[in-house]
View 1 (spheres, rainbow, N blue to C red):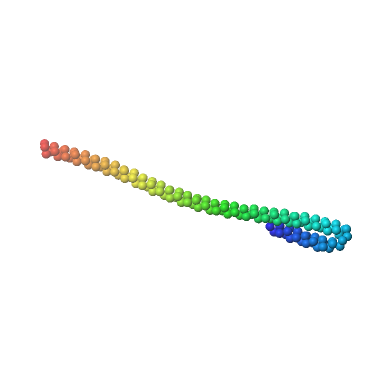
View 2: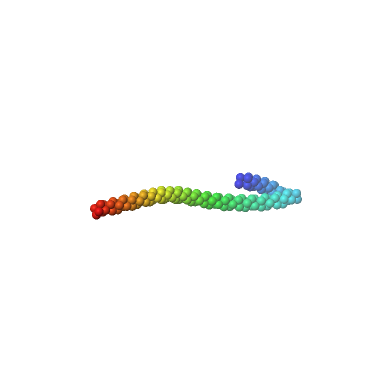
Amino acid sequence: ARAIERERDSLARRVHDLEAAVSGAKLGDAQAAARLSQAQAEARKLEAAMRKQTEEYEAREEELTDLQDNMYTLSTQLEEEQEAREALYKEKEEAEERARQAEETAEGLKALRSEVTYLKTELEDERTKREKAEMQLKQLIGG
């Protein structure tokens, strides 16, 4: 943009110089008229070049604005994706914690089942002993 501004300033100085040359060339001789015509042609070329540079500058400004808009959009998307990743990571940690707790609960249930099985066996043994003792008692009483 600075280079364009410098070029524009340079072109403006040249136009000014050419306009000064044009005013000095109004002396009326044929050579001055030719220089005037040449200076006017060059001035038109310079004005056309200035218009073209201005259009290019405006087009670049528009491209820059579009790039800035795209950059903002991408930055916003990146932030949203980062937040989504963080949320997923948190969900993963919570799921792992629930899985760990479920595993602990399952181990606890397994231990309880073992304990229940052991107690059932003990109870069955006690019942068997009691029945034997009752039979022996009946035999002693009855017999």
